[in-house]
Length: 184
Figure 1 (cartoon, one colour):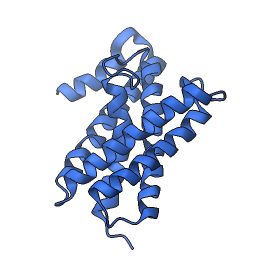
Figure 2 (spheres, rainbow, N blue to C red):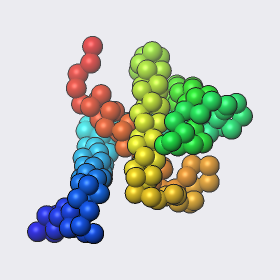
Figure 3 (cartoon, rainbow, N blue to C red):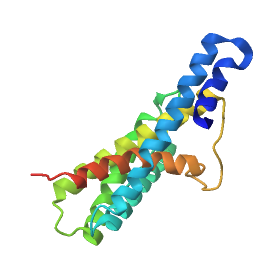
Figure 4 (cartoon, helix red, strand yellow):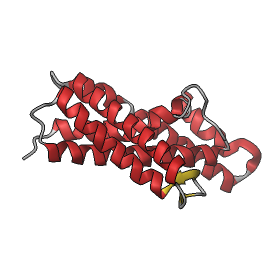
C-alpha cells in the first residue's frame, strides 16, 4: 500500500495531470535507478573469491576517471559536453576521465589481477570511465528534473555522496555482468 500510495500521490497533487505524469515517471525512474542498480554492488562482492577485488578495482578506476576528468577539465576544458545537464563538464574533461581510468586500471591490474591481459585492463578502464560519466550525467539530469541544485559538498573535488555513488552504479552493474559470464 505504501508503494501504491507513493505512486498515486504525485498524480493527485495539485490537479495538474501533465505535471503529475511527469512526476510519476521521475518517481518510478528514481526507484528503478536505485533499486535495480545498487544490489549489483553486493552481487559483485559475493560473486566469487575475487569479488572484493573486482569491487575495489571498479571503485578505484571510477575514482581515477572522476579525478582525471576533473583535473583535465580544469586545466584544458574549453568545449562544453552537455551544458543543459551539467554545465561544468567539458569534452576535454571527458577525454581526461577516460585516460585517468585507463591509467588506474593498469595500476589495479598489477595489484589485483596480474594475469589480466593489458588490453582487457585498458578496455575495462575505458568502459568503466564511460559508464561512470554516464551515471554522473544521469544523476545531474535527475537533479535538474527535481530542481535540486547540489547533492552535497562532503568530498571536495568529487561532489557529494550522490555524485560519488552515481559514478559507481553503472560501472558496478557492468563489471558484475562482465565477471558473471564466461569470456573468450
